[in-house]
Length: 181
Image (cartoon, rainbow, N blue to C red; front, side):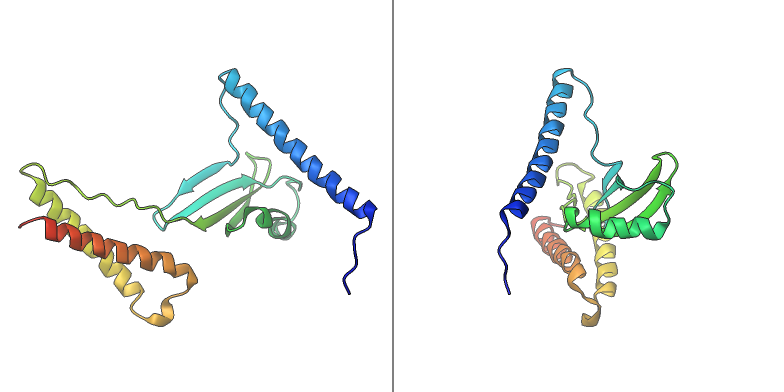
């Protein structure tokens, strides 16, 4: 049975939304003040990176829990309080840091960015450079081909890798047709 929220419950929810909005505005004001004073901005994360597997990885300090709690409590806090706010990021690791005085979480999401570099065909060494490039690409494709040799191995997480593989094959074929050996 669906029950309607009372006026009191609606007001409490609105107060919570306003508190969150006020904190966001305070953060924005702080950013503008630092920018006006030409100060460095405060980083949101302890570390942020993009790896060769096509993942965007961030590390953050777990606020809201003391540093001396057990790892099970830290993981529970991460699972129910932090990860829902960072969807589609998923859990990679959680560790205790003395430097950051508490627990640090590492989370990631798939973020395919084309970082392939295809050298231009301009100078006398271009054939040698292109041959090396195609040999490296060939070895990369062999590695992917071995990994995806069985259809059972492919999961939803592997779809971006398959797309990158197809992109690399198409790109290689385009370049081979452009260059005369």
